[in-house]
Image 1 (spheres, rainbow over the protein chains, first blue to last red):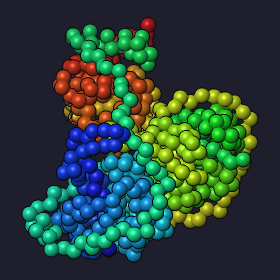
Image 2: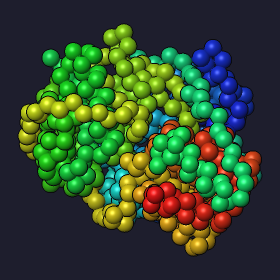
Image 3: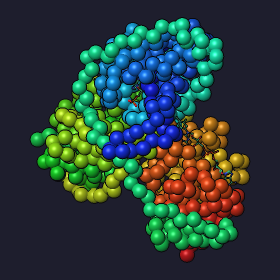
Image 4: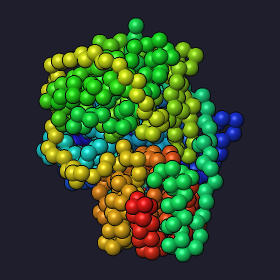
Length: 246
Length: 323
Ligand SMILES: Cc1cc2nc3c(=O)[nH]c(=O)nc-3n(C[C@H](O)[C@H](O)[C@H](O)COP(=O)(O)OP(=O)(O)OC[C@H]3O[C@@H](n4cnc5c(N)ncnc54)[C@H](O)[C@@H]3O)c2cc1C
Ligand SMILES: Nc1ncnc2c1ncn2[C@@H]1O[C@H](COP(=O)(O)O)[C@@H](O)[C@H]1O
């Protein structure tokens, strides 16, 4: 089957990120392939290794995001498309740009959410734009003939859902451990094609980010010392009298 | 007059706590904006929860009953909600941010040409638009966002507002639709054990991490949860090893919980875990490493070995409950 995996470059959330003047600032070098998208790439590579097929990746982002496309190619993807766009795009705009590139594939994979926006929208939006059946928050993926069988984590438990192809699946990182590109993969990626072109017809954003704020401050915590019995007695007293939760 | 519509998740006919919180906020926003307030329920027997929804102020309840809603598939839900939004002339639709809602929100936004603000902790009318505050970057920061036009879809994190009653006699609109056959087919649901407290709706959560190494420690966590009437959560570390079910995972990948009380046992407090619990009202951390980052967000920190702290805590809670 032919897979198209949508990958985003995001700031590394474990690196230092500051707020100044309502905007976020971080080291431009500390950007990564969105962890959920890495799992999507891994899933496509595993399925095509077993059943045959190919894996293309598509990214919307600034020039410097080319390295993230390259990273997916180094993992083993066959070809990349990089739609160059600067500035913040909401999930609706991104999904509209992705729709033009991702149509015609048997299976489209996205991450369940971007680690920076934590929105979790673009996958479902893309499926709707292309009229495809889809499943979100997949933790398992299998191919059975022409169908894709997805295990997803729902509210009540693990749901197993069969989708006819073409279809779209959004992936959780609980699905697999994405491979780290080896030297051979990195060398091979240098010879793979990236179709780089400017994003055109970027829809006007319906959603705008006015600015960023720190989290509301929590009251400074208290350490409870002493032997376990004393600690337990003190915390129960505080939970009952101070926090009123017991 | 257009409507502020509130989506209600009502498994077994009982609206979840998060759904009643969302309905409360919908009612307040309808009042402030001069709109009608209505609730929509998709279920096999959707009218069953109308009385409760009236108690929380739903003037109209759109009850869409169909056997299809016995299965957690997104296509019928998207179709039904798009239909009800049109019927109700919805200007704003509020949802609880459940996995079921996350599964349909993006598609519904495109289908209904709506702007969408997912997973917010505050929402209000702002200068003719809808403004919201939403955690981003693994809940390290808040983004102040704004949506233009109508309709706008907003999903709210559980615990963002306090549910309050404002009783009315609801008008029940039974909506019958001919739903398209779903291309996706459900094969099975491996469910959580019956009788377990639902994590996202729980008032008290006891969460276990890698420090909970063996059956003895797991039994302690289960006993602590039981004496508190708490739901059991877990870090990714102990979900990966299969010690706790995947549905118990709290965090950026897992569920977001904001209970009145969260107790973390043997959890270090990695950013991706904290993302799922930092909204809890009171946080207790039990960890033997005094430098564990979980203590940075803890209301009460207990540095100690869980094998001795948890039994002492169980005994102390039992004593408190008895007396
Ligand atoms: C994209 C991404 C998404 C992720 N999503 C999630 C998520 O949703 N949820 C999540 O939890 N993680 C998530 N993670 C993983 C996260 O980064 C951490 O690896 C994980 O939370 C660690 O779990 P832990 O705290 O149980 O384990 P550890 O970090 O190993 O901490 C164990 C703690 O137990 C303490 N301990 C050990 N023995 C005892 C004892 N006897 N008594 C008391 N304390 C003891 C130790 O001092 C230590 O602090 C994600 C990671 C990534 C990259
Ligand atoms: N700029 C982008 N380029 C390519 N794919 C993207 C982009 N933004 C989002 N996606 C895909 O859509 C998923 C969900 O994104 P979001 O709706 O922002 O949470 C991501 O995990 C990616 O797979």
